[in-house]
Length: 268
Length: 284
Image 1 (cartoon, rainbow over the protein chains, first blue to last red):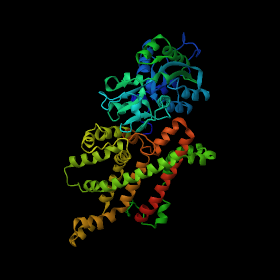
Image 2: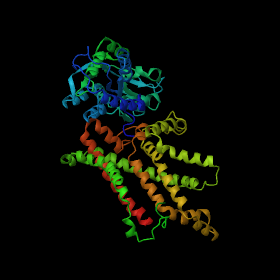
Image 3: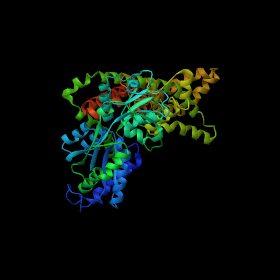
Image 4: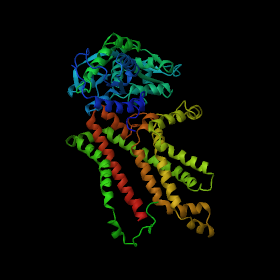
């Protein structure tokens, strides 16, 4: 039951089952041959396990579809959760090939532990936006409304990347927010807006776009001062280094950049 | 409700309790030890990882006292609510033997559902019912100005939803095992139904009620999924110990281990002291 909300809400039980199967397959396949640094001429039909920040759910899902289409027989297993929780799992020895984090700090934890294979690459940036329920019933117009105690406000907890970014934005604007709940990841905050349980939440711009008509986004001045950098790396001792490298290349390449830009990310 | 019947259809003659204690078949020992190890070893690993040298400093963090107080208070409130409403429900369940079997089984299944429902789903369901746009919640808001989500009351509601079935099932079992002839005897002596309930049946099932209350309290104390979904997470208002441990794990694992240790110690203390005082004392 623990962590049920943050761990892979989109992929759910199917992903958990798939992860188990992928583990078995990875075990049978043994070590993929080839140099981890190059993705050409090596076995990229092997399976890849990717741990990624919750805010990458849609775009990495799309990139994974392209990877599977381009590498017949390969399966990409995606596990989306809060970056910090994922980093903790990787430090505890989770079998991961690629890690995409929504914060440089979180990525540094993994690098410092000697678990990153090569230098992480910043591949996208994200800014914050205020999300409100359709029609904006509480009439929220900007950051100052987040200090209104009469409104019900959700922020991300300061322990997770979107919360750290929120703190930076609010501090820079000199606003003391009056949140009613500090959510454990950005998708949980967004869900509270979608259900109409909060009047406003500070979430990523990409989350507002991904939610479609379920929420409205309100841009605010100063958002550009707190850009969240997304970094990606292969994980040390990946079961399939060649496939991991190929997947990272795809994210960093033109195709990946286009998918990310469509989702509202700035290019890193 | 348990082990009350002696003289089970065994072949041996009745013995003293001391003699009976040695009668554990050898084949049961290995799986029993494995089961115990399986339950205890993860906790041992947790205790080993606790940064003992920094323990006083980490324990002194004010957040720990705040969330522990909230956890104990809300779990106690959830247990009280479960007793108040759960005992009558258990009564109806236990005395439904002459009902239509379909109705009886459906009622039983409905009570059991929260046990198997993933707590996060339970939290979403509570939001959809009691949230300010929920089925009932919209009227609570419109008519009385009551908004439950993100309040301490929401924590208690989430815990009660998840924990009450434990109490209901325990009490129902006790009621089924209780000797109804005592109630009949009281009735022939002219006692009213309410008097019989208070003075005959309740004392009779007290051990079952106590065991159910302990289970219910323990489940409420550890509640995570329904709480974080329905009540949210805010220090001092809705951030109970499990939520606080989960968040600390994201940024400060040492603090998370200490919070987990405190929760572990409190749970063990509560379980041991309550069991000794209420349960074994009465059943023995």
